[in-house]
Length: 101
Image 1 (cartoon, helix red, strand yellow):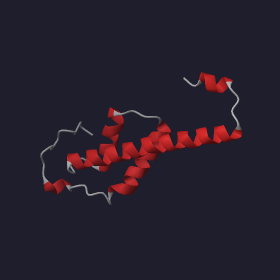
Image 2 (cartoon, rainbow, N blue to C red; image 1 turned 180 degrees about the horizontal axis):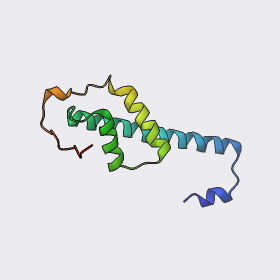
Image 3 (tube, rainbow, N blue to C red; image 1 turned 30 degrees about the vertical axis):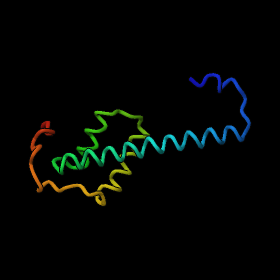
Image 4 (cartoon, rainbow, N blue to C red; image 1 turned 180 degrees about the vertical axis):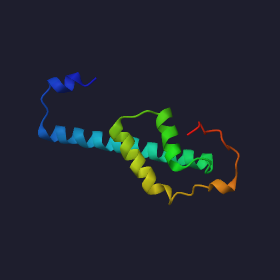
């Protein structure tokens, strides 16, 4: 897609702007994944622990390893402060996501 960019010489300023735009886009992608995982955990209402929730999310939406690691770290850092209902609040999904692990 960006073959024309490789063939064309860019000024240092243009390269810097391109790198900044790419970094901002990657940060937006990571933050979207983090928000989605936290929403998933809230929807599950504490039926699965955070590790299993992350595993399910990564199975549904595979991503590059460095993105996956960053998403996992940010979710773990924010999980306790997020308002996720405890497992004792209800068992509506009991054993739905259990696969013998």
